[in-house]
Image 1 (tube, rainbow, N blue to C red):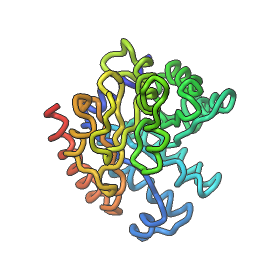
Image 2: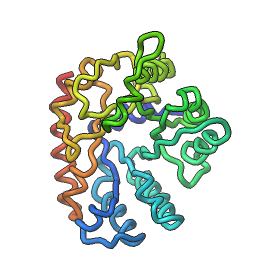
Image 3: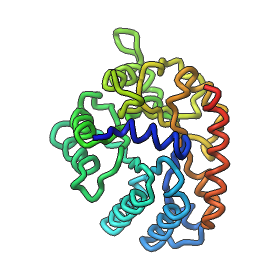
Image 4: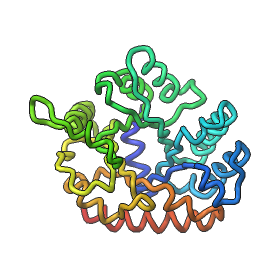
Length: 278
């Protein structure tokens, strides 16, 4: 079975190093002239898939914006996942799940088991019940060729109090997360299946990302303030492993499919210019 890391490495080589979110929040629906209901959600998502699904390496639906409409919204999410798969994009579901025991095992079954209607290529996860609490996710991902992106250094100001706290060994909580995920990728070629989420707005983080061996998802680009050039400062020598992620910077160009494609091509060119110098 081909691993997620192998599929991601190939997709980034063929389609370019870019992840685009599907974040249908009320403001964007209104900007597109769509109602803030399930019909608007479905039209928004289908337009993004039609415009970008056959050309972007990774598409990242934000689960919460679908879940807020209940079962009908989740049905749209299931349909969106199927459409993206048919178009050839890898699907990274932004769910940030984290729990223990049978509950995290159930999350793993929901998102990383091919028998599930919500099955995707990879998910985001929170390690703040301990990285080891996510073992069921890592095991399911390994068994089914999936991936997990674990939160490490996030852009929100509240995150620093936890992520930059230091333990008895002098390492920050974030560095411990980084080091534990690095161990999961040892020996993986050309890219491990277990990645980290590191905000592109952070500047020099003072953390060592050079031994991760897996992908580094970089949200915060575009509308949140970071530019492609900022990736050099944030990631330094780890730059070749970065997967830049944009949402509103691209989605704001809609609802015209051609404008969405043009926006995606523009930010991809910006990212290529930075990453090819790594």
